[in-house]
View 1 (cartoon, rainbow, N blue to C red):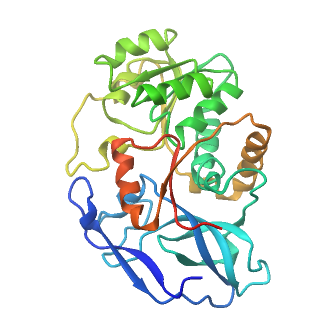
View 2: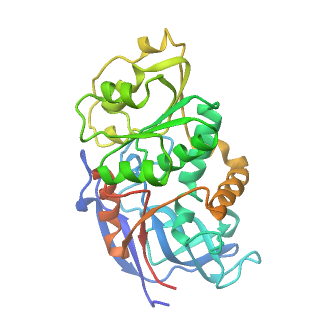
View 3: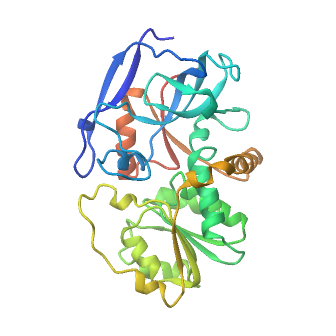
Length: 337
């Protein structure tokens, strides 16, 4: 064990896109767990697009950070000191902690991690919050039927890559938008997408959709927003469903972006648009985790993690989300066994 603890602090509210001025690395004493808590040595921590919203001084579904707060997020780590009968030193767990070498977790709000099912970073992606988001967002909000066409934006990310595969399990034609030829190849060659569009290499998204989704769009899983979503809305079929999971194209906007008015495009197809927060399904997380774990263990559900090594590089890993550096889930490797 280290005799001190490094921890990232939220140092400054950003204007538009964050930069390193928003973060400060401090070193202090090891935290001490109280009754019912665990001191956990962080092995991997998660960086996620939703964290950008917590940097704003505004109400949202996730409580905003105050300047001076520790940076927070999901972690996977090893229990080094337990004040709970439920876990012992040496156990591997996942939960919501801080960007630090060591973090204190409430034993009632952690889950055990089984490295025989998947490597530890997967518990921050396909077997964590992103996987559950994909599972409930597609099956409950998108409600796909065999033979329908499902389009996914941000398809090579942690959520979108799982969405597309589950849609294929349900007998759908799947089309993904991604930001590089490497990502497009991963989607079609490894994950089984029927078609994928490199949005950085085409000028006309509507024409690209005509080729990739000639029968129109029955389910749209939106992780991005922006002009991709504008194009997809023109292709919605009768009774189409749209699951709005994320809008990363707008997370750094300081004003309200203008664009095509989408509501009139919902009238003729009688399409439904629904926002998605995975926390609404918290009582059913066990169901999703069991199914996702079974698919991963059998090899049916592919996953990929982009690991940035070193706690000191956590801000770089987070900022890389907005330039599309990652394929699959972006995580930070903090310590070795």
